[in-house]
Image (cartoon, rainbow, N blue to C red; front, side, top):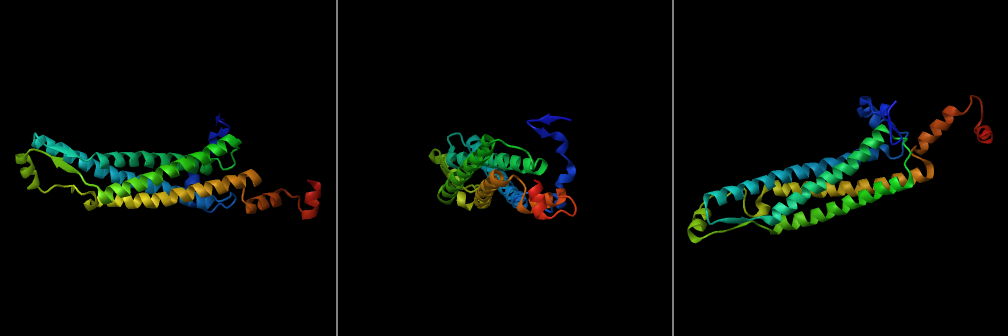
Length: 237
């Protein structure tokens, strides 16, 4: 038996990924809601990150091509490059926190966590929510109002002006940038919802433990001797 940090690694089983186990098991408080909303937060933020990375790569390639073909040219797109890079970091952060929470709840639903660990989870969730909110605001403003621009001497500027530039210099004309922003806002909503659910779950854990009210009732009914009334079971306890 391998136990790390009090977690029995034998509990990591492939069958736990079955929907019947993930969503059909109602023994644990907010289990189904956590699994749905946590995954939404992870997926939406990571997809936003991926689409934003594609847009970022296009602008970086465009900059390299223009500056290579026109010696006096310089492409200025640092605002989009910066926010798209930050969006990558936010996507990874959200996936790390709620991905870890998802797997811990899936494999080790009855694990014991001291108070400092419970607060670490909650603080981490709040931090990534604030990061995602700042990301969504900045990404929206830059995409809606910003644009790349090219500085060059008159000859190169005239040649560049005659080219069809792809991606477009104005960010809001870039479909990938718009898609990344929309997905990010949806991911932000799911991230905030995940944080609220996590706080509600740990409040319940502090009062009753990880089992739902129904799960505790079924557990008590299973261990109560046959023929013993509820009053007798409580007296015996």
